[in-house]
Amino acid sequence: MNTDAEVQNRRQFDALRRLLLSLQSEVSAAMAAARASIADDGAEKADITDLKDVAEKAQRGAVYDATMARAVRELQDVEDALTRLKEGTYGTCTACGGPIANARLEINPAARLCIECQSQQEQHA
View 1 (cartoon, rainbow, N blue to C red):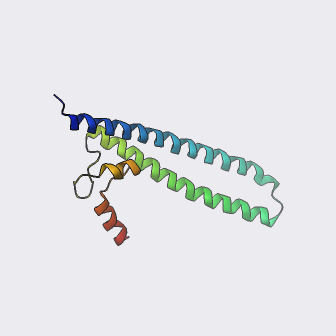
View 2 (cartoon, helix red, strand yellow):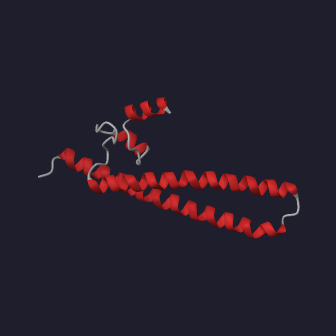
């Protein structure tokens, strides 16, 4: 028989799973839109005659690369969190094995570290 705490915990995890799936869809859609945008830029390159245009396109390319790198990391973090949910380790810090606070998971559902371990990692970075 499930206790009230177990039922509440399951509801929280279900809500976080839905949030993770939503984030996964959003990031994937943003990546697809960015790819389409850069493809459109590529089609326009044949018309470049001005050095300013060349610089603008190069800058957009650099922004695209940075945006895609961030999106790939974010998507991987979300997929890793979904894997931890399936394995039953979601909400457990991957560094110390302690619990990750529900408030932290609600803000960052893909969090893999508790706040203490995250702070330590940021101090050493």
